Amino acid sequence: MPHIFAFIQRVVDARDPDIASHQSRLRSYAEGFAKHLSLNRDDSNTLAYGAEIHDIGKLSISESILHKPSRLTHAEYLLIQQHTQLGAELIQPLSLDDLVVAIVLYHHENFDGSGYPARLSGEKIPLLARIVRIIDSYDAITEDRPYHKGAQPADAIAMMHSDAHWYDPDLLKEFTAFISTSVT
Ligand SMILES: [Fe+2]
Image 1 (cartoon, rainbow, N blue to C red):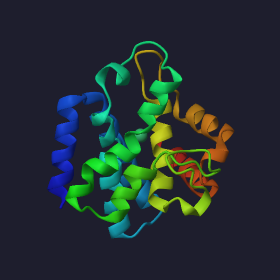
Image 2: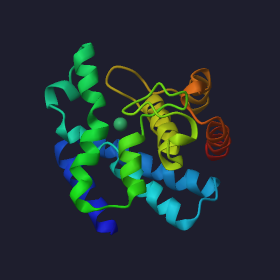
Image 3: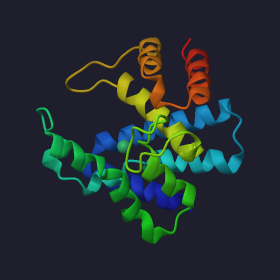
């Protein structure tokens, strides 16, 4: 039911265009990287939809925290982390594919077990969530923000390699190849 994802994206855009454009970019990265990985059609579609709505839970977070111009307190940071579970709760009545829900819930899990919300590690993290973890970081590092200019693709990849313990090593290797072929 692709229309559901388009609807969710419009709702997000109405509340917060920055989150919506981040989600749109992630959908594009997801489509390109799925091709690079030769994922089957079902997984490619699921990945694209999950990427497009992965931060839906941020709608449940107060505006004043989401757009706080100064540094977040530890308590505020913990609150923002709740967007993963809040997102899964928001979409629960839609009975979406379990793998889409897994992307929303687990896209901040780190390969070394240091992520959230469940501190899953390695292949216990669903594959599609491990992929979104990587493209989400890449977009955050390369995109211009009010307080910092986005990094160039090669610099972003280098930064991700210096934090390689967060990412599935095979996927990071493939993503590095994908970016170097798509940005020439
Ligand atoms: Fe997120």
